[in-house]
Every structure is written in C-alpha cells, then in structure tokens.
Amino acid sequence: MPELPEVEVTRRGLAQRLTGAEVLAVRLGKPLRWPLGVAPQALVGARLGEPARRGKYIWLAMAGGAQGQGGVLLHLGMSGSMQVLDQATEAGPHDHFDLVTTQGVARLTDPRRFGAAVWSPGLDQVPAAALLARLGPEPFDPVFGGAHLHAQTRGRRQAIKPVLMAGELVVGAGNIYACEALFRAGIDPRLAAGRLSRPRCDRLAAEVQAVLAQAIEAGGSSLRDFKDTSGSQGHFQLMTQVYGRAGQPCRVCGTGVRKLVQAQRATFFCPQCQKR
DNA sequence: AAGTGGACCTGCTAGC
DNA sequence: TGCTAGCAGGTCCACT
Image 1 (tube, chains in turn cyan, yellow, brown):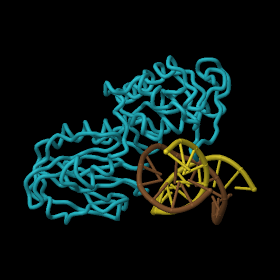
Image 2: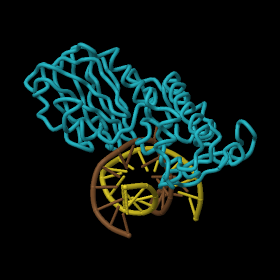
Image 3: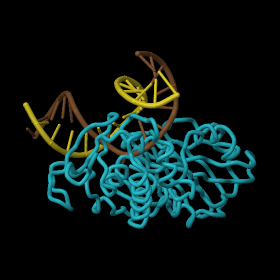
Image 4: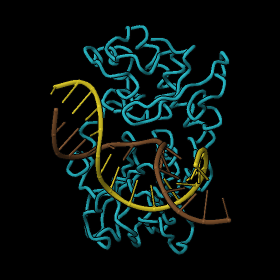
C-alpha cells in the first residue's frame, strides 16, 4: 500500500493527534520485519515530539521515560496502516504495535507484516541510520531535479521504471507513482535509464513531484486497505491514468493500457503516449 | 558493480 | 460451490 503520499498522510495524522502526548503503554502483536529492539515498558513515560518522515519511514521522536532520548522508526511495509483511536479497543489479529498515549492510541495494522517499528537512539544513529542509509533525496528537496536525475542515471542500462522505484535517485515513488509519473512524462518505462535526455529528466523530475503532491492532497491511494489515521480512505486511486488499468483505454489517446513485468513488479503504461 | 531473482507473510481474486 | 495458483502498495540480501 503505502508509498510516500500514504506515509505522509499518515505522518500528518499522527502529528495532529499525538504531538506532545505521553506514552502510557506499548503493546506488541506478532513479530514485524524487525524487532522493536527495546523492552516495551521502557518507553512508558516518554513524551512524543512531532513525527517526521524520511522516504517511506516515519520517525516518532520521544524523550524521557526509562529509555531516554530516541524514537521509534515506523515502516508500513506493503499492507500497513496506522490509526489513532480515542480508546484502546481489543487488538485484532493484524494489530502488531500499539502506542497507548495520553492523547489516544496509535495502532499499526499490517496483515503481511512487512512493516516495522524499531527503536533507535536517534535518526542519525543505528539502527535507524542503517535503515535510512541508502535512501536518495526527498522529492521536494532542492537537491532533487532534472540535473540530479540526469547525472545519476548516466551509464545505467537498467530500465528507468525499476530505477525510479529503487529509491536511490529519489525516495517515495513506489509502483503506483512510478508508473503514473512515467506516463505523465511520456516516457516508456522500458527505456534504459542512461538514455534519458536532460530535458526528459527535467520533465520526469517535475512529474514525480507533481504526482506525489497531488496524491498527498488526495489523501493517498486506497487500493484495498489503506486508511489514514482517522480511518478514512484516500481517493487518488480514482485518478490513476495507467496503474491498475490494463486493457482499458488510455484516458488521453484511447489506446489500450498495457501491463508488463519489470523486476518482478507489474508495470502499466500507454504504448502510444509513452515513447522510448 | 550493476543488475537479477528470491525471500519475507497473509489475504483476496480470478480461473478452473 | 470450492479449491488453488497467482498476485498485491516494499525492501533487504545473495548471487552472477
């Protein structure tokens, strides 16, 4: 589910509800991708700062409590979402991390358990630093743009779509938004990254930013189960031009949208609008 | 060294 | 109707 827009929508919800709250209890469900790395009760008494986001990770900074300065790095994996409940209801079989606070209960629900909640003494310290180490620039960071995209793709033979998704050139564009950005930029997803001209890099960078911004505005995409922290669905999935539309007519030219597999992930594109 | 493929885990759906 | 193979928004790791 969650690409950058969904994670950002989640972060905003957490920020609104939980900033300044004090941790009363932590409840763990089944194991997630990585262990929390600290005894749950060690977080009791800590006060939450404003949640931050880096790529598809959310950083819940906290101070005080037995564990002292640090925070919890959250990832929603493929199927995760977070809700903030007024009261702690009984945990379901897919609720694997509850942060009970004075301002509500933040609950991570993640059926596939590719997500994680990991304690770290700081964002710039292990284990958080190790997890964030390979992330490229944020899409709205001034560092990211056509020049960066162009420079970083020289000599690369791999197709642009998996390169975009890998997160080394820019974080945040997962399968949906990589497909959508390439469509908007008129670029064939199979084109070798190193063959993108500078003007096309400019265009692609702009479209990555535009599609992510628009998706955040729309509350993210809810393909099957994504919900924001108050339980509402996003509606960007209603605006996709190509993602999930195999066989349906392109909204621009009417040609059938095609589906193929790249790096073991489905790619959707319009063979007419997107050129090599 | 870049690129590829497998792994992690569960639920839903399309197809027989 | 019922089973099953295949597929799903991510990312790490091992191997070529």
